[in-house]
Length: 480
Image (cartoon, rainbow, N blue to C red; front, side, top):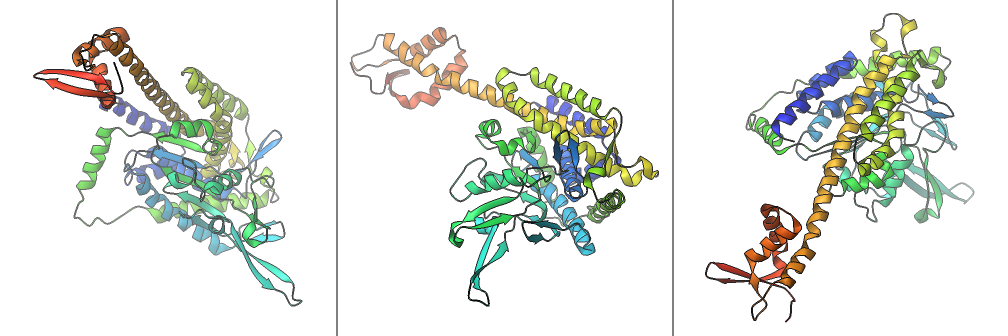
């Protein structure tokens, strides 16, 4: 992507925000002051926070299936382009909201499997992926009758709030090791719908006489990483990424340079932060309280909290058709991978439509018009989902081009061997280098530059002999 193309990209990023609810637009505007050009991830982060605090008040019916409101966000972007900076804005806001909810102590309490799970909210942000850290374990003791008693010690993954990975590349999704292989199973499980029991993590722990450990994690995931080398393969084959709303962005070099220059401007200076953290804490908590009131008025039944207007389903169908049309216009290999995301993206679209309606509720004076999911809410949510699947397709197409180029380059070596074998050689098996390259160029129908560049990669397969200005080469291992 050159500078002109990127300016168009920036304009599109600005234009999509016009469709969002006012609260999202304000949040994005302030987030962009601290994390340049990351408007889409900023808005998705707000969806994640709102979806998390709404999850116990709302269930979203979809035929025989029922979904919760949680959004799980996978942000894959070039290193040093504002991921951690944005988290420094989002994290304190989330902590502030969690603190306000915890202080009230009125949030619904989960009672499952004879365990009462505290309804407190916090942020999980660790790099230790062992079972005791993630899901917990047991302490062994004796009761009054001398019988062995196992005391359950919950892990850090249990509870409500956000599960934040700042270095998701070490989670085991991209490179599995003995220490993190279980974390993928736990991630897949906690992202299951909260309607039912499939989201409860369970494991028999050998170190505790195979006692069954249950972990009740209702968290929303925010996972950040740079694009690893095997990203395209992981996207295609790992279900955990397909459960997330993925935003994949390869920031061009010239934009990275602009970002670095912006950072240098403040080198050696103390700049007071004026990020309006408390304003957004108050704003999100207000949304929470209005939603809580609605939940109680509707009989404490999360299926009754939201209603859906005429045209809602037609609006979803229109967005599905738009998504399918976009994907169907891509290469067959890309289309096959992208279609794996379609069903889950439609579920995410429904969740985000509901969240848009929830976010607008405090600003609607007529209480009878609140918590109605409209076609407008669908279009608002679609403006974000569209950015995500378009960047995903762009990445897949780019990866396919690189893969094809690599395959094409690999296929050239046999042509070098063939041309070398057909050439007249001196007594030691050497041939003129320029003549060999020209023969490969003609037979392979490749440009001179591509052949010369490729030869640099395989030069170690040839011995070189210089005689004056002339260069001769001999295939390593070739014997007369």
